[in-house]
Image (tube, rainbow, N blue to C red; front, top):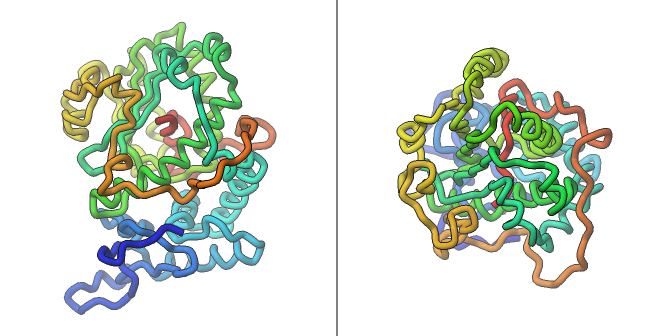
Length: 364
């Protein structure tokens, strides 16, 4: 458990408020935290009053959190039963407790099969720099709301060359490890700095160079790894900017967005080559790499800097998964797609369908 600085108080711990501070009857005055699992040392209230989000729950939703936790405890689960985690699974399943339970159990089964809890503290990816020649994907500072900015460039993907450097298993393992590092320490550090709970990223997907000849390889790779993000890491999409979208992409998007939940559609912005103004309205120029219209030029390259609150002394804390003792090297986990993975279409509710279609935040 992480220690809490007693000089700081993060998030409500009681349901008592003055009459002046009371929220509408449909919303509970504060989110109930479970002392057994909720050892947070960062804010626990979402910045805006969105239905089903921390600090903005109805009494029924609060009860569904407790119900889901009790059901999982009854089956012997003891990890990741904190309120914020359970809420993400519930939102992904529109607060259908049985469906959320299935999604959680499927995730825990996968984690056990892949030994993920043991892999994360010891994982090393020495081929990262070589891989970035074909597929840069990294976190870099924050957007105006304080969320981590995640960037992917798909134009140079060459699966034949990439598979000479690494394997799909190691790529999948690295994707999962970086999701774990997003959950802790990145998002907690960003939440501390922002003074409010942040659970999502601002993602930038650059399609420059993705033409007719490159598109099949890009699609093949996304298809192979999308099962991991959609099945096991729900509710991590905050905003998505698809930039340098090629000719014809807008037509496809106009059709696809009709299938999606309006809330999800609002998160996605499809832009052509003149994206800079809109992107800079969300990401401060000093936080955006120069190649995308910002002013940041990190020494050694922004893609390798991993700059952000998670490395700033005032906001950074050791991740809960960190181990002091050295552990034995563990083989890469199997690719999280295929027969052993839950069906791709069952990953997220309609509100998160877009997360299935776009590459998810992955590598730092």
